[in-house]
Image (cartoon, rainbow, N blue to C red; front, side, top):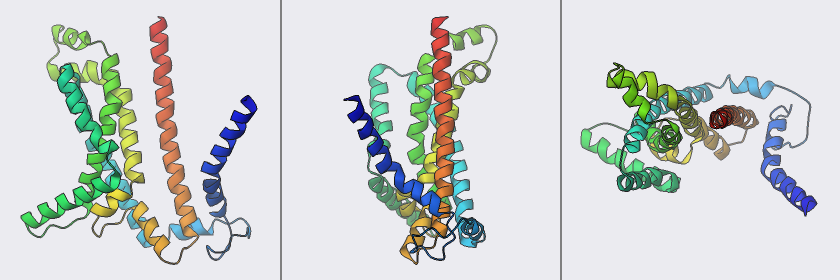
Length: 269
């Protein structure tokens, strides 16, 4: 049975990651068109052409700006919301958490269409406003916020609730007690939530597609490339995007494993 389970696991991983491996390999292929699936030699020309593409650089800049702002704002709002939720009674906390989890379980296409309709309605009501960078940032904050809340809440539960009151008894103001006592205790959850929000923002396509207007992000740019003559640049672009997401996920997993080890040592002590 162990041999069968190992073979089964290997087949699953092969099915999942073989296309990505092929994509990465052929991003270094010295071919002229995407249709040539034969290895023609190692080359970095598609990466060089990629960063000579002005439209791509604009999409990359838009993606990074949107992801950075969305991650920062959702982290601040999510941390404040998690602290507020942590102080609620059980019934209220359950109701608020159900509302918080709704954007995560809701299909992305439903969220994208609903946000688009909302932004169009607001834009028409306020005058000549159009969908663009601002609507993208608001949309990304909306779907990133629940993930930050879920990252911070476990750290709040692990923290001794008496520490905050003890800091105030020792002379700290409520704001100073928060920054001196509460924030350092929940900082791993805050950082994890921010990295996760940044990762989700970079990777999002469906919601961005409906709320972007004329503004292009990297996923939308890749989609527009597939609708035309497909250039091998898309292999290089997809490889860079995949590598960025992998690095951020490794940082998240490393922090989580580190926090678990520290919690285990604290429990033993």
